[in-house]
Image (tube, rainbow, N blue to C red; front, side):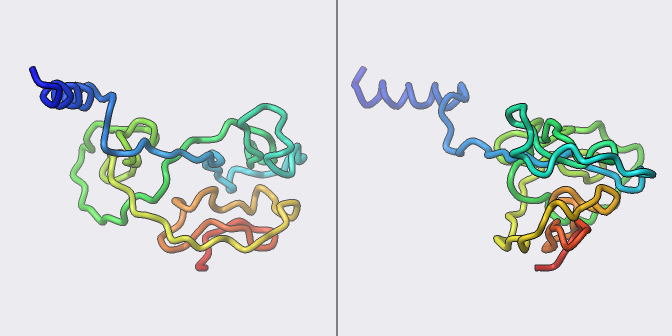
Length: 167
């Protein structure tokens, strides 16, 4: 067997085995878990001002149980779920995923007649304006990530609120 044929066969074997792919691996970033401000009756004392205040490696300072504290973040892939309008038929199919980690490559776990893995839409590069996190109270956190907003809005802090904003 010639060297070229041997190299070709090795490349095919590695590709089929999933060891070598043409796609780059998915990139994840940490976000605060979803938060429902309507559940807060009484704000709790603040235990952190920012991620740097979290002693455990990898934790984020997030609204949780009506107060700011260090929690384990959710890992999400870049981009947003595509804005697809669908007519769903009941019963909904069995979910394909629960989080982005359940989806292959760069696909995201999107809600579309159940949870399905879809190619994401890239985000616009606009950045939220600078703000003072000490002013933000948990009952005023109406979004925790850009995906909570309709595109092209982003989830940003504005004064004492965190909400979906046009940039």
